[in-house]
Length: 88
Image (cartoon, helix red, strand yellow):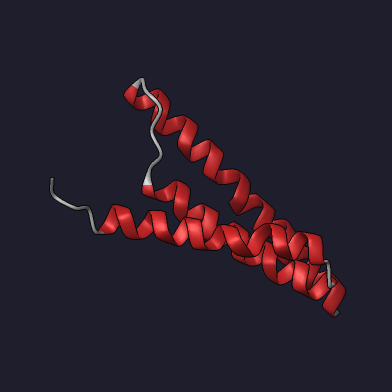
């Protein structure tokens, strides 16, 4: 498998993970009959965004790189907040 095929597959897998977060969020919201953003949403966000960022770096696409990189901070922060809730 050459590099182009590997990175194209990586990009598609990243896009799949990124899209799956919306399926997870929708199913959780339907289950609880209210808008819910479960941990899995953020995990799929990290997986998808990370793979898409690798693909963007390989493609040397600055727009795509700048579009994905900052989002990872938000996704990891939300995972942190879920794992370390403050008691009020």
